[in-house]
Image (cartoon, rainbow, N blue to C red; front, side):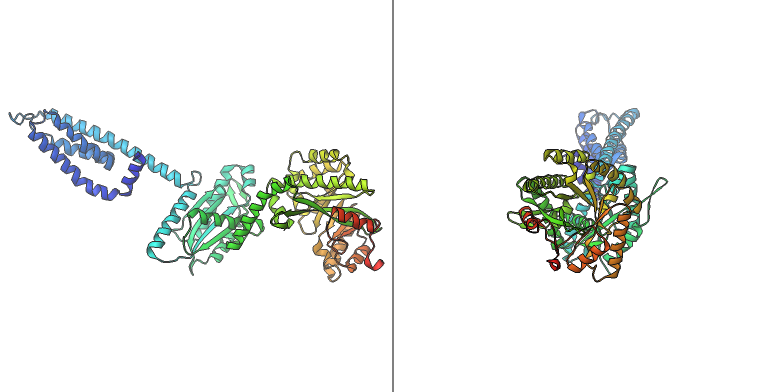
Length: 563
């Protein structure tokens, strides 16, 4: 048994041990007295046996207990015990007082050592169960407390509506890099204080990671989880204070509800973390109660990402091409490259299922490189077949933060013997706004290579007209949500017409995406829109089918009503 285990056992049974030890140690001292008296007196070695009950007392009761035991032992072996029982010679006062003092020294020293070890072990145990920066209980403590609840529930044979609530600070990286880890600690401690104002006094708030808090509560009519989380969100909308600054925290809340504890504690923490992740993925800072379906979806997404690298290496990914027609001439000189994944066992996997998740990982850099490389390779093939096309490839905001992205694009152009005029890069409106200054710098370098830059999904984001003018953008693509209702909704027509006029006045071309009927196409022509794409014109097609479709039309698109 280790020292820490021994002291832990003593602390766990402290009261019982002390109650039992007190009469036993006193009886031990009396036994030593009788041994000394029956073996000839204090002059013999048997008196040293008294050190044992003194040391035991010091270990069990600490310094004060060791001192008390030493004084009692000194009196027991003091003036009433002769030096020699045969002659009856009494001890000198200095002898037994000195012995008592030496007993006191031993008892106090051992007791202080015992107290120090006990204190250090308690500190270690506290450190294991607490976060040192915020002094909040940590994940280990949460797991231990869930085990205790499980044991209690099994003994009582009742079910409780448990709610494991995880609260995550989504913008923790921004705060840490801008203000340091101390700011993050301060914010989480303030979050904990706000939580405690809305929970019963005995509710424990745990810090399970650097940017996450957890609490385990039992739902009742006085504490309904949805209303509780709504109140928390309201409290978290207030800024957090750090020194003289007021900082904003983006809070995501995930809740997993269960009435019985049938799995390991880490299982429920994992589920709460998955619920929080699902809230962040959906970009909706609200409460998500994790169920088996959503959990399976998250697991499936993670597994898909694991297979994505293999898909890149084994050519499971391919590009389909959707034409953009010139609304003034009908010429088919532009196309958008759209990624498709056909897995050997799972079949066709929609882009919406893996691309958004890849954008939150470094895999997006490889996906973008593959898309540009494959699109440029196809441009070369089409040139050899006798026609030239500019191909648009979608890129992510993360690509713009990639240090060598411009060099990578330039290398791919050189690899295929093409100049930048063969390539168009599309970014969504929101992705451009993540870091405008960096976007301007990187996109300016790309346009100097002759590459065209366009804003995708225009009208759905929050870009400022001020930045729109500063960005080196040549084309805006009006989101299909406006185009789909163009023929039936006056509001959509006004918005599209205003966007077309605005773009033309600042020297940009306009693409309308999502054209699905002839009437919308006619309206766009009347508005002076430059390009159009959509299912009415053509679905995205594999490269060979696209080439045949274009060849059959002679490179000029004619509406069905015009043929």
